[in-house]
Image (cartoon, rainbow, N blue to C red; front, side):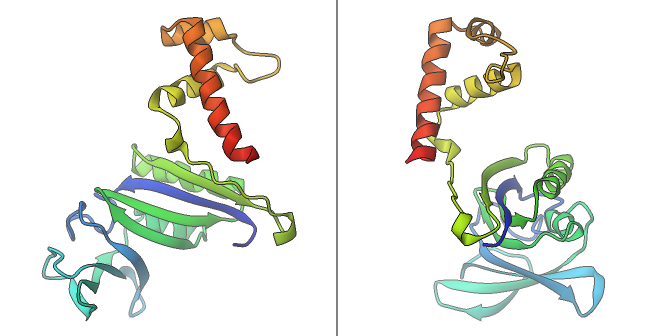
Length: 211
């Protein structure tokens, strides 16, 4: 991977996703590829792989049968709010696209932080429940690279809530924007409970980063 930031986001598989109304959003698909439709800037061709018995509409064509899996193709209109159109406008390449459990999972590479922020802002405008699943930053050269993937699912929902509240309140700032008691009060929990959650969350994160 070259310099930049690799991001994985989760979006609704419904509109403005090009898959809305084309396939069942609960059906896993992967290896999505896109290309222009015979020079038509208003239409895009999408190909993907899924189970051979995929329940699909008439406009979805089977282009290759692997047995248990099959490759499919369909045309869709270019929609400005589509996540793929947003990435195209920012010149950001998509490295992987899948649909799982009704969510469109898109992995892409942004060249820098401002580009990443712009893409995520547009995603959020079009999909209010957009979630950032993973961010991975690389240095300018392989020799300088020291990449760490942080799996946020390692944290419990309560630990993430406490971390978010502490961060938003300035608990980690210097000087502090809020002390432990103030953050605990905002969460309606005891200070000792806050300290337990924050310590457990920090321990998990540091174990990942320093391992």
